[in-house]
Every structure is written in structure tokens, then in C-alpha cells.
Length: 450
Image (tube, rainbow, N blue to C red; front, side):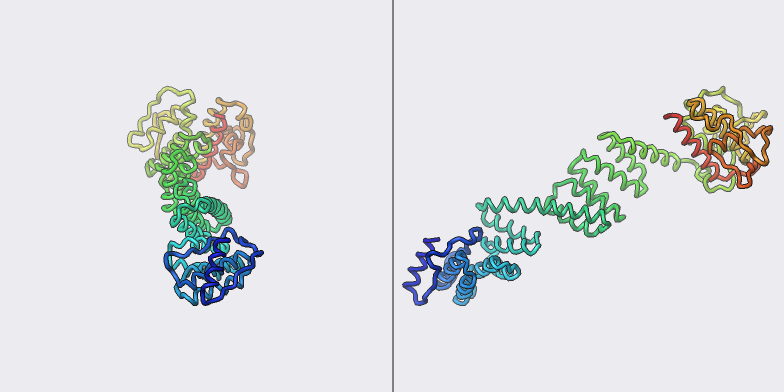
């Protein structure tokens, strides 16, 4: 700085215009981080160049009015002298007038897009104004124009990381608050700053999934997995998206890939449920019509019980094969064989099963009580609530042949008596009623396994 003052004194003594310089006792570096707006080549008149240097001395001495006066005079002497615009930008920074500073720096950058003093100053002004993205672009451009600016390069990296952290934190808050558009905007900006970070794609995929934009969610989750193949959360998210899209096979594949990376009991149960759904979807239309049926056939009940309780029947002792003469054309033959061999449904003395015959509440109670016996054999303690049940029904006395089955079914919670306290053995069973009963049996059978 003393050398610069000496040059100005010499120029002042020799030139036609008198320049006022800071007194020798004035501080010479009040703003040491500001970058002197160097003169490129022969830019500007000699007088403009002198005023620029004088303005910088006044700025560093802390006299902002004198600095501004000299920079403005430099521009009056040479209208296109953009280093003086940069000088005025630094005066604006010193005054905390960031809008004015940014305006002057912009003018200098327009005149020379690679002018480092203006790029750095504009970056600082924009940071102060809260425009981090444009500030980083300006500072990055300065580093590109002058790779020797090591300290500035480090600052740019710190700002980029800090900005990324702030964006991710704000995006997560926005997502938790249900402000999905804001969250996606912040994640997109974070991805722009760090395009190789897999967790960003996974998190923006979750936002898109919550918005119902499943196609975008799937693309982003797959990108996360591409960047980090061992990302279990991304793999599970892909499964969730496929599940939401009703792509059960693809969902199962994604979940199983996640399970191969990391055990997860809840996920295993989800896969099991999906597989059951796939199996049911492949069942004949007669089976799929059960839930909406106003009445149920014996072959439908056999299939429902046989499918839902297959594991229990496989573990139970099997009876000898029975001869059935009337099931050749039935779609439910495999399950009829399963339930009859398990002793859950009977074959009549004339060797018929009567697949098309309707099911009544007495029939359902009988089948349910036999299933309860199989469950009790596996875990007797579980059967304590329904063993030797003594329920009271207004229409089924204890001496009735179906009383024990009806009482056990009600005591176990598999069936319900009617509101008037009757059981009504001959009443037709609906599909929904049968499914509810078998679901309860399925739950009890699961409890027996545990």
C-alpha cells in the first residue's frame, strides 16, 4: 500500500489535477479482505486510473465518502472504466448497502465476465442478500478465472457443503409439515450441488411418493440405488412404490433384495402377505367371488379353509384317503381333498361331497370346531378358552348334536350368536361371514405356531 501511495503522490505532483490522499497516519488496510480492482491492460485514462487508486486508499483508510467521490470521478473521466464500478461495489459492501453493492458489481461483470474483483465482491453481496445459489456461481466463476485463489476455493467448498446441509434440513422439515412442493424444490437444489449423493435421490423419491407422483418417485429411488447398490432403504422404498402401483411381483422382488442385504421381520411379513395376495389373485373366479357371495357352496368353503389354513393341515396328522364320487368336475378338488383328509369337512356315507350344496351356520360351526381341535392339539393352553364351552342359545339346547360345535365356535370368537341369543343352525352363511370366521381361525392357528 505505501508503494501505491508513492505513485499517487508523484502523479499528483506532475498532473494537472490535484488529488487528496489520506494522511500518513490513517489506517491503510481497514478492509484487507477486499480485492483491489486491478486495471486490465491500458483500460481507462491516466486520470481515471489515478482516481481509482486514490479511491482505494480512502476506502482502506475508512473514509467511504472520499472513496466514493474518487471512484465516481474515475467513471466521469472514463465512462467504461469498470474497475471503478467494482470500487463503488466495495464501498457499498463497507456501508452494508448490499443492493447498491450488487448493482455496481453487476455492471463490472457485464463489462468483463472474468473480472475477479467484481465476481468476488458480487458473491459477497449476494450472500448477504440471501441469494446463496447466485453467490456461489459468482464465487465459483472467480475461482475458474483465477485458480490461484486457494483461500477462496476453500470458502466456496465450505459454502457449498453448508448450503447443502441447510437445504436438506429445510427439505426434511418441509416434508414433515406436508409442504411437498417446497421440499422437492429444496432437494432438487441440493442434488444440483451434490449430484452424486444417493441419499438425496432417495429422500426426494419419498417426497414424490407421498405426493402420489409414483413414476417420479420410482425414477429417483432407482437413481439412489444405482449410486449405492447396498442402500437398503432405497430398495425398500422401491418395493413400497411398486406396491402402491399394484405391481406385487416387482414389489416382492424389491423387498427380497432388501432382505438379502439386511434381515427385517416386518418386511418378511409384508412379503408373505404379498405372496398370499398373488396366490389368491391366481385363484379361480369362483374363489374370488366368495367375499361378495350372499350364500356359500361347500366347495367354496373347502377352498377358503384349505387355502387359508394350509400350513395347519400340513402339520396335522393325515387320515387315509377317502373315496369321493362327485368332485371330478369341481374347480376346488385340491382343497376338497385337503380338508377331508384333515377331517375338517366330511364325506357323506354315499361317498359324495356335494360340492354345490349350500353351507349353513351349523355346517360352518362344525368345520370351525374341527379346526379348533387341530389347533388345540398343537398348543393345548391356547384352547382353554373354548374347550368344554357351555354357551347358552335359545334355539340350540345342550343335547343337540350341533351344540358342542356351535358353543366352541362362539367361545373361540370364530362365530357370533344373533342379537336375540339364537344361533340359527339352518341359516345360510354369506361369503363375508365365512371369510371372517376363517380369518379368526387363521389368527388362532398363527398363535398356536408361536
